[in-house]
Amino acid sequence: MEDVAIDGRTSGTGSGEQKPRRGRRVRMTGAERREQLLDIGRTLFAEKGFEGTSVEEIAAKAGVSKPVVYEHFGGKEGLYAVVVDREMRQLLDGVTGALTAGHPRELLEQAAFALLDYIENYTDGFRILVRDSPVAQSTGTFASLISDIATQVEDILGLEFKARGFDPKLAPLYAQALVGSVALTGQWWLDVRKPKKAEVAAHLVNLAWHGLDGLEPKPRLIGHRKN
Image (cartoon, rainbow, N blue to C red; front, top):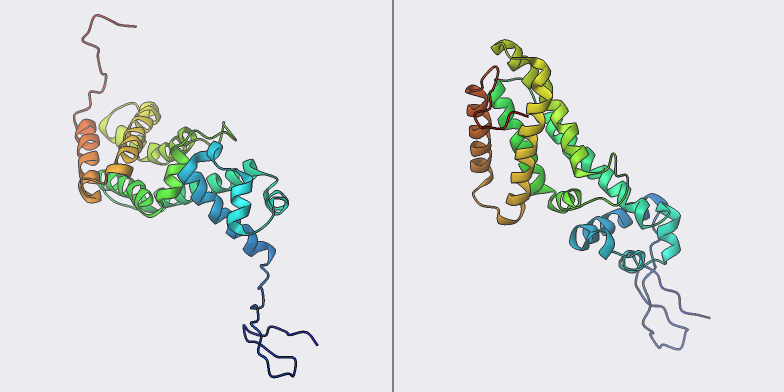
């Protein structure tokens, strides 16, 4: 009679000899395996980038064979696309949820904090997003994400422009400029982490708000170039 491992214990053959037993191996469900592969892929993509990460390494860290990765995602590209999509949704939801009612300047503060919070709490995800995406170039890039966030800010600026007598049709341009500056500052802050988050947000809003506060309804060029 063969020894049988039960809950990590050992059983003998009747001779009194105790043999070491291997614990019962727990089998993951398909959903659990998928989440495991996504977590591993997210970590590796953040650390090494898309090109530096291989299906072999993902499978090895998960303790599975390469076909398991292909079965769930069709390959490295599929896994990467799901990781990027999740991170984009996380950031967009954070920004959208932060833009609650309040003074326009406070809304700018909320937007700045939302991005900085994401960088602080989902550092790996942000590292992935700011890399050049090799897949879904039209919709899965950091530039497209910034454009989506700017669309949220655009409505706020449109109302502010209208109240000040400015052309609200220019709000998209200013939204792109404002969100782009915050995003680029966020990339810089990702590594340096100085000054503190609240101070970074205060300076970003200071530049943005006082720039808007002194905005000319019809800006003019003072240099020699006119086109």
